[in-house]
Each structure stands twice: as structure tokens, then as C-alpha cells.
Image (cartoon, rainbow, N blue to C red; front, side):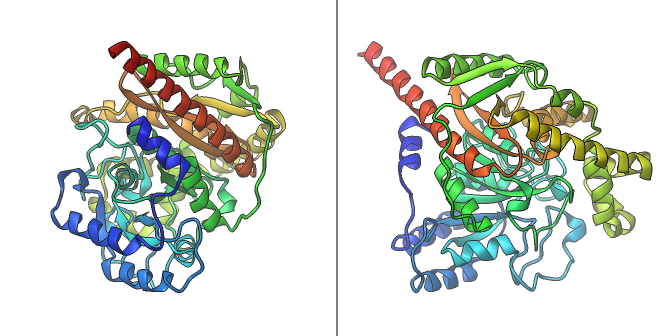
Length: 449
């Protein structure tokens, strides 16, 4: 995305009640031509429902998201449609009788739901690959993965098919594809958005949140889904901690160089950034994070695992199979470790925020995933930095920036319940990043002139 386009997205909405009808017609005409950039993005369009919504918003009081075109990950119920969760094993389920609670609230606020988006099967990977329904290409780095599990959602926004994408985040499934495609991805505190009508991967870790062009757009969507109306202002430049004991090893050289350059420029702008050890992260490293999704998904999808095993993606079912390695005592111990960690995170972080690269790697090329060992290695690296926020029951946001032509993400994380504080700081940090890009572009133009 160009600096000009991002600046415009931050400063104002790109939608309205008045333009919704024409924009929707333009979108569906575009989709009818089957453009390659939208291949494998949508698993289902809800055309008739979208037109019904158009008629309804004409009689509603306007909100910040009135007329916004919103895509929905295929984990959410939409009345009259099957919720497949990217899986053939769920394709024959009954259609949903009602909209998921979060989707219903968006509709009530005037959003136009346009369709369901593709995803990793059952949301069980940070890479976005789906062998059943295909995988969208990365629009900012063609021939490379878009990240997951909310792959189609991120690409729908990055290609301007949607203004906002609604996804889920169990270990980074909103923030990873946002970082890979140059967008903002917000994982709120789990309790802030109802998960009623949304299929789970991990009841312990799942959160619902938005992907969009800017922090403002994400915040408006989250406010609609959460019902939060308050506003909070925090210190102009709070402490941002770059941990010396987590998240900064095994980085792609481009990520390391870009992030260090970002830190220098933020310090030059007066941001209060400290590099130091965070003690609770030592405890976090001891938590077997894979227990949550493996054990809980086996419980949730027990019928599909037992009766439709061969229909599941082999890489997904191998992760589900690991539940057999976990005893009841082991699982309960992991839950207790997490409970202690949540408390420790709140006590140690206080009013501070953790700042890290969102993902340790740039988007890998599709062909490297022919090898299962490489798939597993890259999946773990993709999820490493992001998963921490889910385990501490925190809130976290990925902001896009670029360095030497590479798009990547900077991630702010803090303890749970501090969503408003996080969003306030994220808006300010986003502005600093945009100002840097504008200054850099001006310097380049001056040299060229």
C-alpha cells in the first residue's frame, strides 16, 4: 500500500450509507469477472442478504461503520448458510438458524456483510494454507502465502474487496495475515466480544477481532461487536518494552533490520522504548502452548475426527492427534500455569506495552511447504511472537510498516482488559510510522529531483 493511500485510510472513512449501494454493485461485478487476485478468497457470497441490508440501513441512524463492506471468516454463523470452518468434514452440517452474535451487532450498526472468507481448516495454523478450497495469493508479495488462519479475510481487505474483515485469533490468526499483507490486525481481550455462533478451535485462547486498513477502522468494528463506547487517553508516550528474553531471535534478516530501523526512528520521535528482560516471559516459555488447541479441538470436533478422519487436512489432523499425548493431569497443570501467568503479566506490565516484530519471518513462497518439516518449522516461527498475547489473555495489535521494499508488522501487546489504552497508543504509533514514511518519501523525491 502506498503512503498516500494509508494516510487517507487513517484520516477518514472510505465508506458511507450513501455510497454503499454503488460500491456493493461494483464489488459484485468485479467478483463476477473472477479476478485472479481474489481467487480462493471467498468461500461463499451472500448477495441477497447484502441487498436486504442495504435497504435496512437507509432507515437506521448512521454509525461509524454504516455502509462498510465487511467480510466474515467462515467460522461465523450467517443465517441460512453452512459454517464449514474451511473443512470438508463440516460441509454437510445444517445451515445456521441465526447470525453469530458479533455479526448480528455489526449488521445492527449498518455494516454490509458481503460473504464468507477462506481460512486454514478449523483455524489450525498460522500460515493460511487450505488443501480443500485453495489458498489466496499474497497481494503484496505474489507467489507467497498470505498468512493465517484468517487468510481470505486479510486478502479481501488488501485487495479492496472489503473495508473490514472479521476473523478469529487463537495464536496470531488475525495479526499474522495482517502483518503479511500490510494491514492492521487487532486481537482484543477475549471476553470483550461474544463468541456465540462462532466455531471454536480453542475455548481457552480464541478471540474475535477485525483486520482493516487502519487502527480507527479496527476500533470502530470492535466497538460495534463489544458494545464499548468509552474513550481513554493514556500518557502521550508510555513505556514500550522490547524484551531481551523473547521474540527477537531467529528473525529473518530483513525483519531484524527493518525492526531495528523502526526502533531508532521511533526513539528519534521521542518514544520511550526500553530493551529489558520481562520476568513473566520466562514462565511463559515453560507453558506447552500446543496443549490448548490440540486437546480442545479434539473435544470440539470429536465426531469429525472419529468418523471423517480422512476428510481432514493431514497436517491439521496430526496436530489434533497430539491430544493423545496429554494426560488429564498434564492438561489441568497447563491450565493452572496459564492462570498464574495471566496474573503475573498484569502485575509486571502495569501500564507498559510490549513491542515486538509481529512475525519473525517474511511471507514464505508457496513451494517451500511441499516439505512437512519446513511447514512445521515455519508455522512455529510464524506463531511464536503472537501466541504469547493469547496465553496471557491479553490484547494485541499489529501495525504495518515497510523497510527496503518489504512489508512487515510491529506488534503492541499488553495485559487483558486494556483494549482502549492499547488502541489509543496504537493510533499514535501508527501516525508516527506514517509520518516516517512520508518524510522518507519526500527525501527520495528531493534526491530524485
